[in-house]
Length: 402
Image (tube, rainbow, N blue to C red; front, side, top):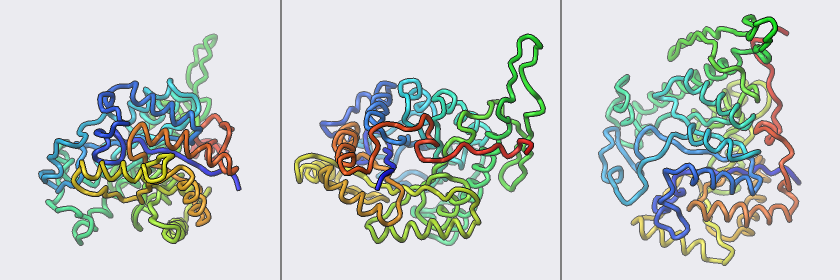
């Protein structure tokens, strides 16, 4: 059994709210380029497929309302503030050679044209290693930063109410159109549209540029893009899914879906729900690659990772609350779990280090060697592009004459 896909999710000082207070953290570097390039270099040293870079349109909060004024949102003992994920990825690109770079953008308050050229530019800067994670904005209070739309004042979890469910369906519909516009803009330049013939003075074959003329309930976009077709043709699109709306969103527009099972049995169910969503939306082409998310605390000494997490829980005043399963243990124990869950039909895993950079090093220097010993992980990169790492072909351009 070979070909396990492995990626890491980078988020501030780590996925524990008190991670920045851990001795293995580097809180002084959070807003420096060196911090992020070091993390990416460590992930590449471990030959991971890609890293994702988290983002938001408001200050981080462990539990806000529509007004954003709860005590948990106002806490000053947790990391607050972050840099733009796409720009961070662009800085990482020249400092790495093979690892994929997948920044997050929030679709709810941004424009698809800007995202399309940003991710396309990242694909050029990285020479074909760009990806993208579109995300629906789940914090209604973020609308106040833009002043272009108003949301009802719903307490979290707002999506659990009837009014919230209708709003969620609208926002996912908007996100689906967003992804479609971005994908069309990436194709709005055919390959080799730039002639660059100095002798004749022709830089561009205008016949290979296309207006996408997208008209929908949320966007009206003419195109073409200002950026030529990216090196990968279509940079990798990923999505995090927890329920029917998000599963179908992923099935319509993504290449990779992140799921959050709590056990092997949950993993079986999640895979089945992904495949059902693909059938429901009549997904064409390649099936989704399915990666399971896990928050991980790793240590070679049995019990040490659990003790470290318990200390952070005490500092934060509550046990870590996560949408994904939280693992504490040794690299060998994590390898056992990954290989067991993989038999449920998963293609791989996206691991969320509890503390950065220490738990990322636990993945690259502890887990990866164990997986190699068991013959399920690469000993070197076999492809130069992110799509290539995942075995995905470069797509044909939808507008090119056949």
